[in-house]
Each structure stands twice: as structure tokens, then as C-alpha cells.
Image 1 (cartoon, one colour):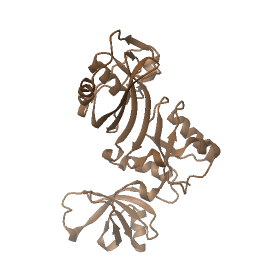
Image 2: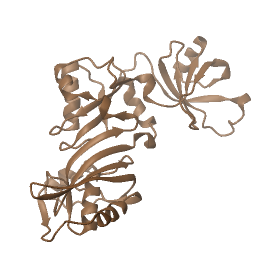
Image 3: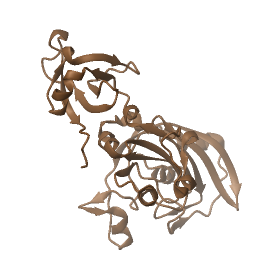
Image 4: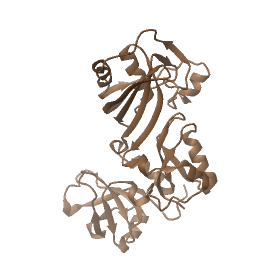
Length: 317
């Protein structure tokens, strides 16, 4: 059984699920899944979780899954998918040689919190159906705007390639932000239209592309367990680690509360205030996730931790 998170460098031209299928076939690992789909036309960081780590995804705070992208916007036309894979829906006949001031003004409009409309060619479900499947079937798709946050957008380059005007930007944003929609929105703001023609996901939270495991190594079945790209189960979350005493194992395995008497040591990796704790065995193996977020539980004399998720050695679900 493999438990942990692998940062895979997904190449352009394959789906995120193709990566999962490759791992399952080559490594014979059934319990694995990705977090945060990366479109086939995009490349870069794809997080793959194994075994018990799959149960940790929902415990990762949203702000710890922020993303950084390097994106190329092609100006002068729009597509139905908002990227280069779609059908052209409009062509601008005017000039697109905007000044830096005009470009930065259009870009800066989308820095901060705002309501973003996702592209219809997305995996978002509408009444149980995936939006892209409905769009391909010719059905009308209307997606509601969703709150996103773009922390920063930096204009890296402004250039002509194959007689097309392109902008290269670096975006730092919240999870759930569609860079395709951002490209489309900036094009609308400029008045000429734009679509996404290149996308590299450089980073997701603490995981970045410089330590990513290349896809060709997956194809060859090269072990990743000792690679920098692999994060062990105990290091996936950043919450404080509580090492319990041997006699407390029975209580943990039965999902009971624990108090200060059962605690051997506490390891704190950052100073963030949290109500969630990782419970480690005396051998420092992650065995549970607990919380002290209960009413009237502020007194240290009455300090108690309550189970959120307990991992059993024989767990196979």
C-alpha cells in the first residue's frame, strides 16, 4: 500500500485521468486519484494522492491549494472553449497593438475578488450532467458566476508570433479559478477578444513544478517513493502533529476522545491558529485527524480532542 501525494508533471495532450490510468496500470496501484483537473491542452503540476492520503484532501484548507500559472493569451479572436482547442466564434478586424498602460489596466481589473463565469466546456455539473458533455451535444449551457480571487497578474511579455499578437502573463490565484475564463475576460476588456493558447501550472500550494515527477518516468515504472516529488502521508497536511502514548492507541482505534494525559509530544510546523490536529502513533505514523473545535472546550484543564477521521491498518475503503 502506498500512502502519500505525488507531484506529477502532466504533459500537454493527455487528460488528468490518463495520468491516473497510467499509474494504475504500470504500478498496479488501485487507490489513487488526482486533485484539481488540468485540461489536456495544459501542462504542469498535477497532484496525485494515494491510499489513505485520498482521505486527507478535504482537510487541506483552500488557501493551501492556491495556484500559480504561466499563461499565453492570443489576442484578436475568441473561441467557444476559451482556449485554442475550440471553434473560432469571433474575429477582430482592428489593431491590437495596445500600449502597456492599456494592457495593464485591462489586466489589473481582474486582480482581487470577483465573480467569474466558468467556460461552458468544463467539468462542472449542471443537473447531474457535465457541462462540456452538454455543450458538445448542442444543449444550451448556462453556468452561474462563482467567487474567485486573483492575487496577482504580471505581464511577462507582449509579442507577435505567426502574425498573432500574444500576451504572456503569470497568475497567482485561488483554487477554482479558470485561466481560460480569465483570458476571455481580459480579451473582452480590451475589446479585441482573446483565447488561451498555452498554460503551464507552475505550483499548487506547497507543491511546485521544479520537483515534479516527469510523466516519462511513470511510463517506465520508475519508483517515486524516495523522490522529492513524493510527500509521505504524515507530511501532506500542515496541521500540528500530536504524538500519542502507546496506551492511547486503543482509544484512537475506537474513535474516542483523548486528553492531555494521552499526549506524548506536539510538533508544530507553523504558527497558524488551527483547531485541527494530526494524531501520530508512538512510531510517528499518521493514524487519525482530530479537532478541539467543540463548545466550552477552551480550558486547558479540560483539553479534549475529538475524532474527525481515524485510519485503521486494514482500511481498504
